[in-house]
Image (tube, rainbow, N blue to C red; front, top):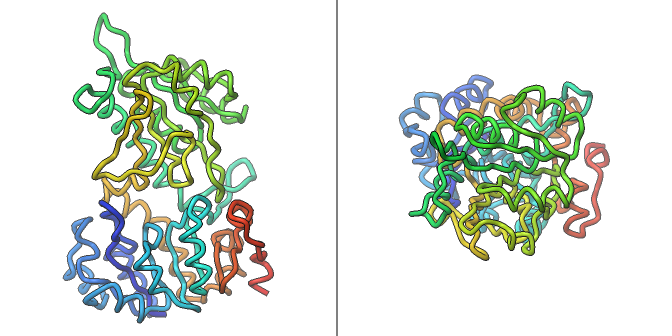
Length: 375
């Protein structure tokens, strides 16, 4: 199979779909790899590195899109990229379709087979399903959320002027983490490490128990409901939105009315913004202009946070995406999905139909079951 990767064109996105090492693995399996010139510069990988790995360097993205059977990316295809997609082609990347009707419509119209990293599942210790291709970026985003929030809290950046760890004789900043999953856990770890006063909200008693055992007295846990959210955001200097409903739009857990009780200059970091955001007042921002203020509250809503630490993020992502890419290239996407139901869960759009039920329900499409597509 001819597999291609291109330079990401989303604002300040420096990650790349394939590292030179991943390109080498695909080539070793007998596949042809095409890489747009300069695609890896954001992670310090040159065209010479890719060429040495067995990849063919192409002059532009259009050549890669036109010539490859499978496109491996990081972020959802932007408008000019979607115009290059075609029926029968495989797109393997993050999609986050539920809050993005325009992208969904374009993918449906193109006839492409679109596999979303964020809905590929894996076995979980408790017998349910994990999201292994989302996990490493959630780990990065959770840790970055505290860094970003701490910076936004500085007075020069519009914040309240609070040091999260405090100093002797001055109380530390209060951090509220809404959601105790991968993002929330990593955010809480970072905040606790800085010496902040940390509270984590979640609706799952097992998650709360696990967090309580891990953090002991270093972080507090509370059940997530409207009353507790309202109370805790009034006390917090920094609020991290870390909720996830796989494939679906994030629930709006903090309304605009709730902002009225918050301290002026407090900060909201909405890590769920890729899925529409969990704060009513959120809208996507970029690394070029990451924050905005609503009712005196600073909002940080960058939709590709891990792109700022592109090298770490790309290698962490490739560790989990490459095995599936190899399986798709080796077997073809249908057979790969027939033999791996976890990969099949990643199929979001195929041949003009939405196959992810959560996306279809959110955007008003009639879902076509993946089992029916696979025959």
